[in-house]
Length: 116
Image 1 (cartoon, one colour):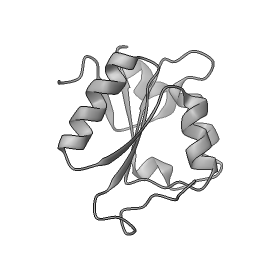
Image 2 (tube, one colour):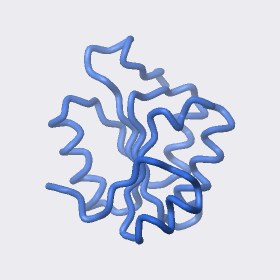
Image 3 (cartoon, rainbow, N blue to C red):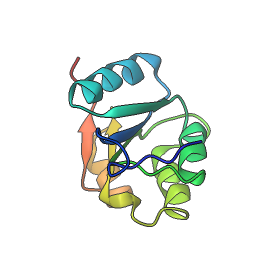
């Protein structure tokens, strides 16, 4: 598995984690149009494989509500191997913003549906 970083590649790398295929496709398109090289993951466990394998990204976008491991659990497990994660982490959710901001103290939160 290759390590990603904006200094190693001409385009910044983004890790996208969402269990919804439609949201994953839409967000991937948005990020690619913005100039990112996107690594899409359909589960938090899949996203952790990249991070635990040494992958580092200019941006990590994660869904909050996913089966088996939610976004806050994903964040805590990823922070254990990448302490700087919070500087590049954003969440997407269909839930009320304040509920998640209060739960984990995050600053960057996008509400679904996202643009196409």
